[in-house]
Amino acid sequence: MKALLVILLSVPFILYPRCICSATGTDLHVVAEYEGSSTYGIKIFMLPYSKSGTEVPALDNMMKIRKEKFGFFIGGKFSIDKPEGEMYNWSQSRAEDFYGSDFRGYSDREIYGFNGGITYSIIQNHFYVYSGLGFIHSKRYRQYYDDTFNVWSNEYYIEDGMKEESLLDVIIGGNLQIEQFIVGIGYSTADSNVVYSFGVRYSW
Image (cartoon, rainbow, N blue to C red; front, top):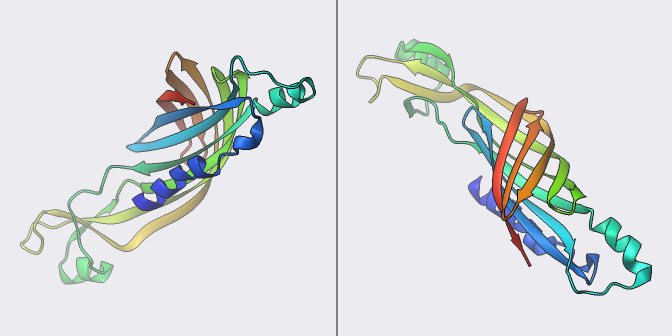
């Protein structure tokens, strides 16, 4: 999964349309996100801007301004917490009927996903809003407690009987650029979480 996220986050560098305008440069905003419940994310924003000192033909001026309002982003999210104890490749029947372990409920969600969308600049790349769609997949493992010698630790979890869920994620938010730094806030419908973000700006 980590390899997939790396590939997805590399796409902007390969596919970014340099032909937007010959007088256009690119702002790259790399932003880390925190959504609560040990869920984190990263987004890469690609934002066009007008290079100072470059003349633009009059007939192209209106189109240039319009195109420079829009950019795009791509990102991913993941959780870092793991269930308590060791993971065993046991069936639910083996854990409960054979070993007699106590079922303690389901673990917190372990999630991963990706997203992408468009940006619209309110104040040229200093303040912009964004909206997009994504996909997340979550797992909740069955957790057990066993104080006998059946397991190395008293707590363990298994995949058999776990709860899995795939959700469409609608994302909205806004970012503010202050010097070379980016701060922002957004919302994710899949988690019903407020998203806090902080990042840095690069340009070429």
